[in-house]
Image (tube, rainbow, N blue to C red; front, side):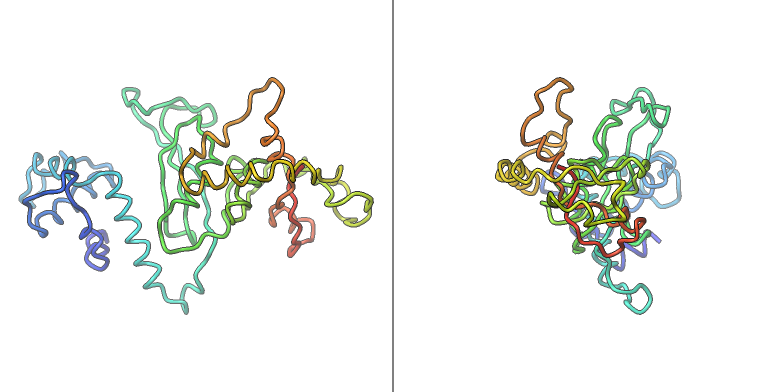
Length: 301
């Protein structure tokens, strides 16, 4: 399957040496790259793969690994395969192209000697986290390595913004760990919807769009509380746009912008506005209340 994907997409043609040169022929380089990718992808290891009867030694495979297979080239290969899949996908069998992706993280066990290994309290073991963005339950469009203590909300935003494929992500499904109050505001300004599965959905509170209309949404009355503080949003709107633009243009780290504020007051005004801005409640939550097509733009204020 790997060989067929390479032959059909030509994804290895763009792989070049990290030093800009190289004396290997395209055919030999493609064979060795296939063996190295297979070794890492199946966790077989280069040493075991080199023992096969293909005529390439372990030193030759390790040379190709060091000289050609960088993180950037691996990501470019994955993007080209994803784009080729989108182009070849039959609408009669698969339907129209989806604009939504699902993201989640997977805990991968690792040795203690690995510099990236960390203890994860939720999974109860040592390892690393790999955050995946998958389209139509079958095609991964982005993956990234994150720390066990890193924010999954930041990883979700990074994958939706930096996937590099031709698909236009308009919505991102995730679990409770991939959403936060600030995450709803940031994703709204970045022009895609955050649609999480909230574990404690019975504890969620919504803020009223305007004051003086207590009976406007009778089915949501148990979840409604005070009106939105629109004046706070107006005061900090320019600063929120600056943060969103910094994320989009990569002039600031998403992890740094979304990092929780200190537990001791005072809370920064822009962060207080993020948490209090009712920007969009996930449609999955409103669907459970009988509002499948509800278009309210409120999260919190």
